[in-house]
Image (cartoon, rainbow, N blue to C red; front, side, top):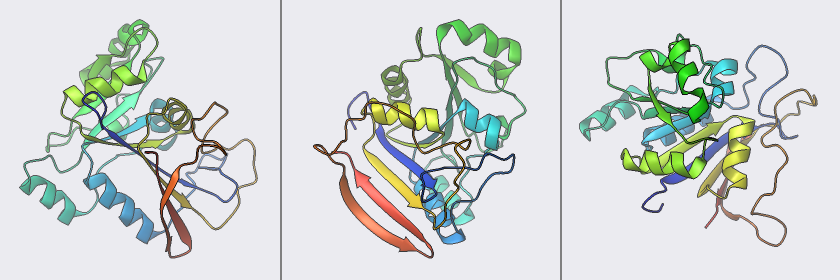
Length: 228
């Protein structure tokens, strides 16, 4: 973390062949109950959770801390029960009725970052009525997004997907820690979304991530890497 850069933790579950979902309409579960609970614990430790607009359209996630005990601990510390919810959209076209925007009584903040040309679209779509819409510059600049989040008090950011967002953060060298849960099966369908797309990544055979932990969680394996 720097003065303008929250600590960025990427969390993702994938199949043995690197897919993060199936090509079908139903969400593919790539983890087990024990690992879902681990992810919930990590969520509770963060100030904000970020997903891309396509993840909202495809999975309709709520992005809330599920454990009441963890929610209570956050409230006792003067925090909202769940971290702020953040999304990135280049088009500005999001359904304001999506679970991401569902109003709660706990004051959870909802932030939508979009490029300047899409600001009017968010208003037309009704997004500006259910979330704080932030101008992220002419082309949706990720460092500017992180700087704005830092200004809002976000010190620890969890990035959960999908493929485009994960690729952008990783290729831009904006990730401090990577949690990768590997499921014990293959998807085998090139139409399905993968962990990352093509790109020039800062980590390669000559410059590797540091493996900080390799832990079996039931039939899933957690690989935890540090970028620094």
